[in-house]
Amino acid sequence: DTEVTQTPKHLVMGMTNKKSLKCEQHMGHRAMYWYKQKAKKPPELMFVYSYEKLSINESVPSRFSPECPNSSLLNLHLHALQPEDSALYLCASSSGTVLTDTQYFGPGTRLTVL
Amino acid sequence: EDKVVQSPLSLVVHEGDTVTLNCSYEVTNFRSLLWYKQEKKAPTFLFMLTSSGIEKKSGRLSSILDKKELFSILNITATQTGDSAVYLCAGGFSGNTPLVFGKGTRLSVIA
Image (cartoon, rainbow over all chains, first blue to last red; front, side, top):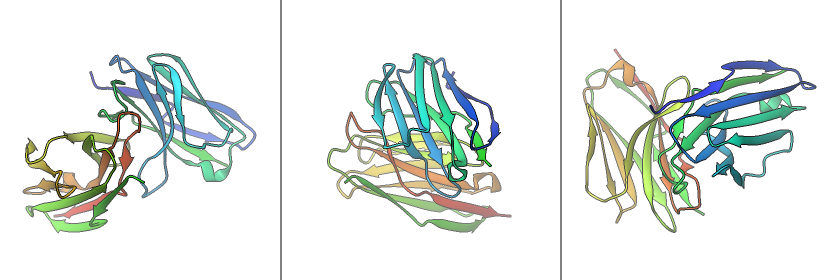
């Protein structure tokens, strides 16, 4: 099973809302990633968790707050977002031995901030 | 700074054509090169290449790596409209650095 699941599939929120994106994998992977992808651009790395610890934060604004409750779950908490944060948010996982291992992506959450 | 460059950025072909997509990289410590296909949603994994000169094949798709010249190609033969997608190349350049993605090649296959 090479499946990474994400919920919700679509999310519309106002700038004052608080919401969370969820990601789950049951492949025994120990590295999990959040990416942001704007239209016609490649994915941009936001955060990397390795063995449930935040190992990389690519200078992401604090209105995005990641959380890794256990080795299978990854959350992204959203608060006070801006319209320019509207994008496809992708979660990925890899085995975790090294971060350059193949990453398997979830279907993404398409976020619209009004 | 590690870099991945893909060409062309976009390509339009007719069904049945063969296409070659290019990916070149500049790295300090090469580890792996990966190809992904992205249609409307998330990228799906195609190939991972670590050794020069060994072709990886899956159906009509194949890919090869040249570590001396620092590039990889992705070939698609007998293209079909379902091959229309963005093809992403990503480089793995050290054990502690996540994949670096190229900008992608947008392939359109018309009937």
